[in-house]
Length: 435
Image (cartoon, rainbow, N blue to C red; front, side):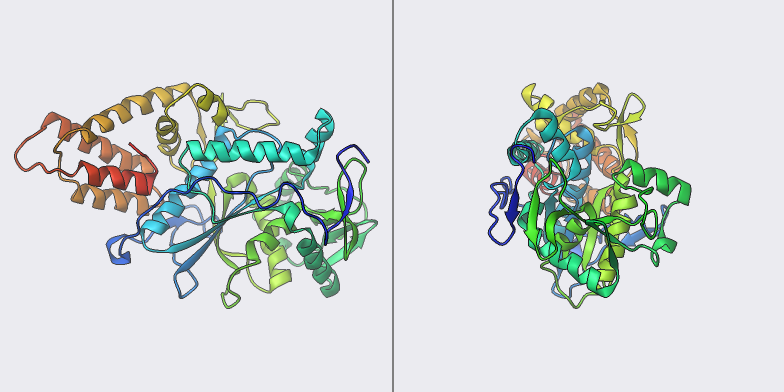
């Protein structure tokens, strides 16, 4: 076993990566629910052209939002940032509309890419992960993203994963294959969202092993990995090993939620590249483990590309948030530039977006510096309507710019009001644009 990788007893294990402190919070005021339109989003499971009204399933008004977190082996690129900004907007809108949002995010600090990089660079996997999580938190602070209420690393829940896999084994929903344990997808494949040929290709590209001999179906995901060379392992009720990817999210997301709901949580979110296999697998595993669908709503953000291709580590075409931080770029410029395009669209990044955002923000800042401005109450109503319409941020920002230009062109005109502070607070609360 390589340096830095060790076998431990999970009952005694205290990982130096666990219990991460989230980044600083930002206050978002809540309004009367009757004053804010209900948020309507396009749910990936319900079709691309159908909006669904987002309401909590818990009668006390708590909304459980789970967003798949980072695998901490590299810096936050703009594709990551676009995803977390998308769900930051959803989180902010739900809070502003009067809901108590129980926002949970995981840290996949037990996973193949992390171990591969640690072995490649001959560093301790825990120290590598700690450094990358801190970098992620710094990037999120810079972008004014609200922190999750709970930020849980996989390494602090090892025994819970083992117990969940043991339960699946006993029920017949999982099976052993040599030193590993797989989930049996046989009865769930009819719900697969993709043609079989496409699903097989994507499954293999995203960590699956469709061609392993002895599996019941080629898409069965691994639940528990037996001891492997150059990987850490834990001593649990299942023996030595570590959890697989999909069971990690299911257990973390459902460990502290109401049991009387028809779905375990309200919303699972992430990039559209997680629709299959990850979110499909999470739903199937949760049905077998907890007897119900995983989430009421499955919401996905689009992919961000560069030079005509999806931005990804494998392609090497990444633009990092930390690069802009080092350049001392105004974080509101970067936030404005990213959120301006529709969150569910696949789009191409360019430096022109930065220049456009600078120019537009300059106009808005100038208007907010006035002593009086165009009245904002009706403008805010229109902004909320746009945002409630599947987060049409672009339409909202166009109205903000129009308001700013009108205010600047008619400064101190009769009928203007001292309401720049009201607009400023709204932009910060709901869009995260602090000016």
